[in-house]
Image 1 (tube, rainbow, N blue to C red):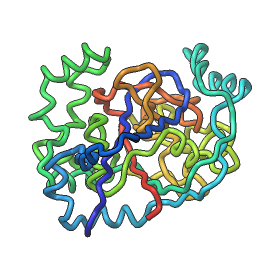
Image 2: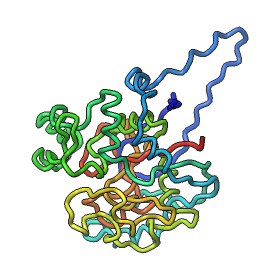
Image 3: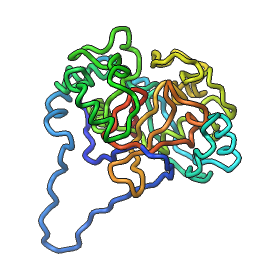
Image 4: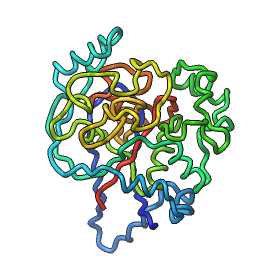
Length: 316
C-alpha cells in the first residue's frame, strides 16, 4: 500500500503549562526569476522511505479502525471551578496543580481521524521489523543510559523498576503485546506514525477527541471515577491491554484517554525548547489528569514507563 509521507512535523516534550497554540508558517518569494524551491526533504530519511511500501497488515487494520472526528466547534481549556475540582480529584499534593491551564474557550477544528487506542507493543514491533529501527530494549537502554536519563530529566524510578518494560532485542516483554508501547521518545513516536501514513495528534485534537462536542470534563463525563480507567487508584502497578476497560471510553468509542499511559502530542510548548504537550493519565497517575484540558510539558528526549502515544491523520 502506498503511503504518503508528510514533510513537515511538529514535535512535543513535557511541561506543566497547557496553553494551546497554532503555529502557521507561510513561505513565499516575490522576486522575479528566483530559483524554484527545493523539493521537500523526507524528515526521516531512508529509514522510512525504504520500508514504507511494504505490507503492514496489523497497522493497516488499525488505520481503518481510526475514529473520525467531524469538522466543527470544540470546547477547549478549563474554568476556575473545573480546576478547583481537579485538585480535589488529585488528592493530597494537588493543591498547586493545573493553575496554568488555558482558560475555557471555543475553537473550530478541521475534521481528523484518531486511533481508538494507544499504539501497542505488537503494532510498534511491526514497524521495528519493517524498518530495522531499535525498540526500547535492554541492548539500547542499559543501566548507564538510564542513569544518564535519570540525571537529565530528574527521573525517580531505578533501572530495576523499569527493566520489566524493556524488550529483549526485538521481542517485547512476554504477555504485553496488547499493552501500550512505552519508553519511546518523541522522535520514535513520530516516526511510527509517519511510517503508518499518519502523524501525532495536536493537543487540541486530542482534547476534542476526549471531550466531544459537548465539552465533557473527563472522557466519560464530568465526574472523576478512577476505577473506569487504569490509574493509581486501581493499584495494578502496570499497563493493561488497551481497550480492556470500556467503561472509561468516550461515547465515540475511543479508549484509554483517561488512563493507562500519558500520550504525546505534536504541539510544542511555547517558550520551551524541545518540549511538547502531553495529555491523558498514566497507570500510576491520579485524578485531575485524564481530563481533556489537563496537560504536562515533556521534553522530547524523555523516556518513561507511563508515557506512550496514539496517531492521528487528516481525512483522505
